[in-house]
Amino acid sequence: MALIQVNFVSQTLMRTVPLQVVLPVDKFTVPGQPLPERQYPTLYLLHGIFGNYTDWVSGTRIQRWAEEHDLAVVMPSGDNRFYVDQPASRDLYGEFIGRELVEITRRMFPLSRKREDTFIGGLSMGGYGALRNGLKYHETFGAIAALSTANVVATLDQYTDDAPVFFQGKPYIEALFGPVAQIPGSDKDLLYLADRLADNPDKPRVYLACGQSDHLLPVNRALAHDLEARHFAVTYREAPGDHEWDFWDSQIRQVVEWLPLGGAAAGVNSGNVGV
Image (cartoon, rainbow, N blue to C red; front, side, top):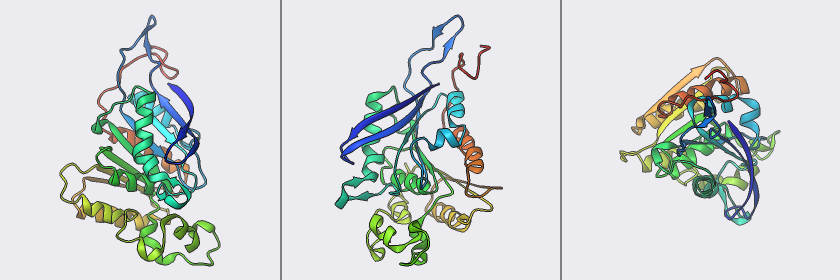
């Protein structure tokens, strides 16, 4: 499995940004014949708050699961910006994730251009980002996986001016999302985006999961119910765990197995030296 770090100049963010990519192009058969070239199904995978583009590889075994299933995984940095657009500061993270990132990585790597082979996922802040951009750019993504989703729009009444932690404060939320009163019914409102697709037969499939000890469990249960009520095909799972990497590691394996990937090609790699 090739593990690649990329830096490129983003037009939507107007600066050089990093990516990490896992790409199963280096499998070969004994006695050393490369496997046929192909275009790989791709999962765009978003980190949570305080994280960056290295989180998923360092915190989970996503590289192993991707290699086993011949899945390319693209992991960008979203800073602490919730993967939404802030035009005033030229931080168009939504457009970056939903359009530019897909376009440029398809030019860089042998990735499938088919919607049914293109997926988006994330955890916590990244779970929100995956749902927001997977729904808004639904013509690009065939499936969405969101773990321990931090659906801030569902908890707007809990944000105050004097919160002890910055990301629980109303000033932080309004800096990213705009005035609180204007967030419901906007393209930052997950249920508003879902309502727009309620009668669309090509809605993305959705995988949701949350730990049974996670403080976000009620929000995630409600989100699963609300999406099902809008006729989305939702797979919802709860399992022992909190808002932490052991839970996300176990769930990302289930996400990869849930994705419509088909069979993987056998071949020699660092985890399979006996073929």
